[in-house]
Amino acid sequence: PGVQLPHDPSKKTLVVLGSGWGATSLLKSVDTSDYNVIVISPKNYFLFTPLLPSVAVGTLNPRSIIQPTRYVTRHKARQVSVIEASATEVDPVAKTVKFEDTSEIQGLVSTTTVNYDYLVFAVGAEVQTFNIPGVKEHACFMKELEDAEKMQRRFLDCLESAAFPGQTQEEVDRLLHMVVVGGGPTGIEVSGEIHDFLEEDLRSWYPELANNVKITLVEALPSVLPMFSKQLIDYTESTFKEASIDILTKTMVKEIKEKSVVLQRPDKSIVEVPCGLVIWAAGNKLRKVTQDLMAKLPQAQTNRRGITVDEHLRMAGTDGSIFAIGDCSATSYAPTAQVASQQGAYLARIFAQIAKRDNLEARLRELQSAPQAEETAAEVTSVTKQLAKAEKLRPFQYSHQGSLAYIGSDKAIADLPFFNGNLATGGVATFLFWRSAYLSTLFSLRNRTLVATDWIKVKLFGRDVSRE
Ligand code: FAD
Ligand code: NAD
Image 1: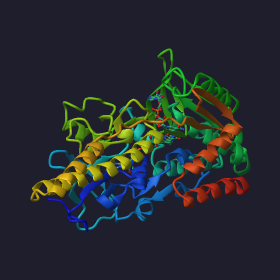
Image 2: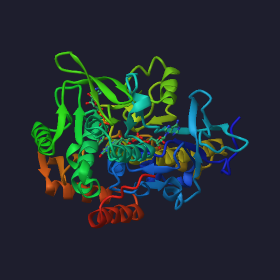
Image 3: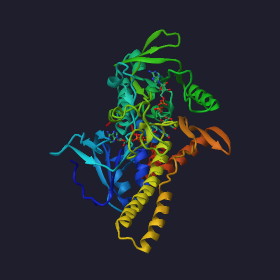
């Protein structure tokens, strides 16, 4: 039994799980004329993740980088149902999704089920903690909007506590030691943003603390940013050196305590380092709802990185009614916004073609059950031809637009495809390119205006250091 939504029973129901990069890109382009579209996500907004680290130090206002999903769907040909809930279970045989209102306030009904004809599974991933003790309890993540807000509060709390009269020097040093775990782009960008805050604002707002702040980036592998070219890794490392950000490579975090991190050094020795704040940016893992769905198709779904899909992004082991995109799927591409959004746009095109195919099939059935007439035979031939064409779905093809990351000190790095080769650039000009690229990628004029205004505000007045 599924819930009754104000829908046209003659149309197929397309359920979209998630409101992130993959889902939003699909929703932007999908033609809703032929589908009853239902979006289910615990967040009723889209989050522009590339600018999340800027929220963590107050460069950007949290609201500037989010966009309500209803804003995205409001101009669609037919109304889209947006439901704020978490999908808890997908039944690929009965073709149902069970979902639950997991927010603070709930009505009398908070769990129900909906039927789908097509399902787009785009629930992303969650933070990988490797079950390392203390990570959940003591570290800040950098994945959701509330993570960045939490980090900002704690970061400012460290500064205010260090400024508390009578603090010992040792305690000041501890409180002002910021440890970032993970040398992927998230960890690098967060470190760069903290550094900017220190350079541009700490000296004016907390002059007595300015020389005591220390940033350490810990990475288990031999180098940071493995997805960038060697030249840009070296450039990032030298920029961090100039900015006095310590990079500890081949060093693994073994435990996080309330006031320290336990590190395993390259020589395997263990050291406990006091710190005020730990930011955990150690990568992704699958959500439970994804793992549970994969477990229902054990023969076809054996990749521990995510859902295996075919070249049309259909989930392997299903009858083709479930599509998986973005970070919850395992493809040969990195789990990035760029990939997820191209997959979402691709699916919008596929659904247009599927609708065409379904309509032609229905017409053919109608014609075949009608009394045979000459015109009918001619139409059957024509519809059959069109159907054969509509059945040929083009495979998904990813087009890499390059990798970009902000590394602090008004510098960014970019690996861009250039003719048949690669252009690796880093510096202030790349930073301006980074800003303009992200400004233009933001989904709406509203977001673009808000982000640009925040940047100007920070230039004019500095960052807001009030702790909410
Ligand atoms: P998401 O965008 O994470 O969306 C998942 C959606 O599913 C969310 O709306 C979530 O609320 C929803 N959801 C969760 N659980 C459920 C459930 N049970 N039921 C229904 N819905 C659910 N990539 C780049 O290419 N360039 C960058 O510069 C870049 N910067 C980044 C910076 C940061 C700080 C981070 C964390 C990531 C960055 N990425 C970047 C990676 C990029 O954000 C991800 O690859 C991208 O978000 C993946 O898109 P997605 O749609 O698969 O998942
Ligand atoms: P990531 O997986 O790229 O990096 C995590 C890093 O943490 C790894 O290098 C890993 O070796 C390290 N690590 C894990 N456990 C550790 C431990 N216990 N101690 C020390 N180090 C440890 O994660 P991410 O940076 O969050 O990126 C996730 C995805 O999002 C990637 O695909 C990335 O390309 C994408 N992303 C892109 C951008 C960008 O293009 N600017 C920005 C952010 C994220």
